[in-house]
Image (cartoon, rainbow, N blue to C red; front, side, top):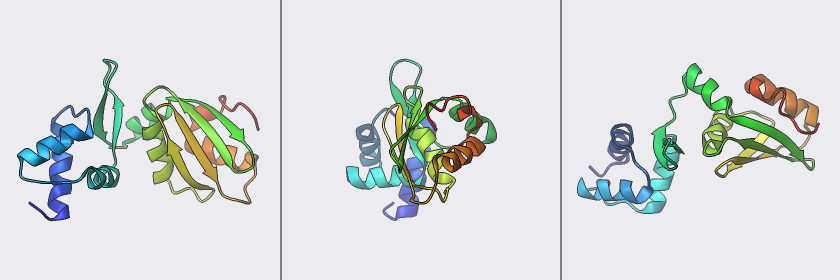
Length: 156
């Protein structure tokens, strides 16, 4: 099972069927199944299939696939805690612990023309804003996409 499509299918099945806590765990399972993969390739594949780590409820994290149904979209969006503009081309979004990556994926998937990209940590997202957009425009774009932000903007 060496072609990329088959590896991605296997990776999805592993994440859907097991509570996977680390990339090492995934690499070990793949190796048991005869698939030798580097950590760098695994990271790219996880991004491609939109897998993210979310809190498991026990103080740890597990990998899950992003199945952004409207209900899941609202649930993750509700984890937004604040938006603060920093300089002309940056904003910082704070989320509940463990949700920054999931929210960042949602922002990236929307391909908002005003947002050049995102960088996420555990509970913080850095938004990189394209030149030519005012804070007010960015605020309105983000509120349209994430209504939960409306009352959580720290500065305009």
